[in-house]
Length: 68
Image 1: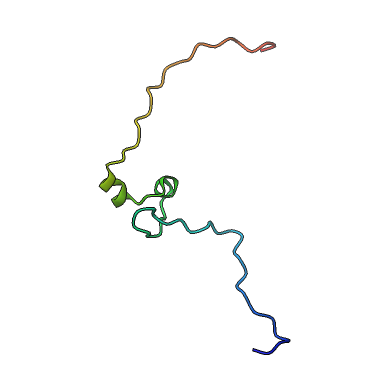
Image 2 (image 1 turned 90 degrees about the vertical axis):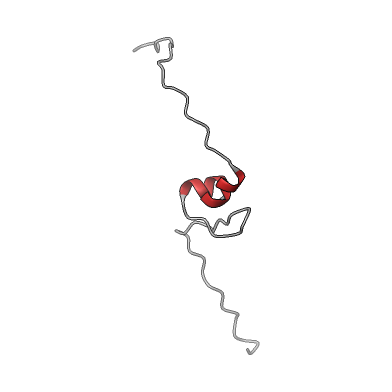
């Protein structure tokens, strides 16, 4: 490469999400839950990590907003 030619680098894709890899095995993660946990489903099963159950929905008593 000559001195007057600049090095060509690929342009970053603004619309793409950065690659996320599993913290245990290093494989690339695609699913939303796997990306949030940072672990693939197989590795989560190995570690026996479970998603906490959602609390039961119950009405919450609250004061009425003024002016409503």
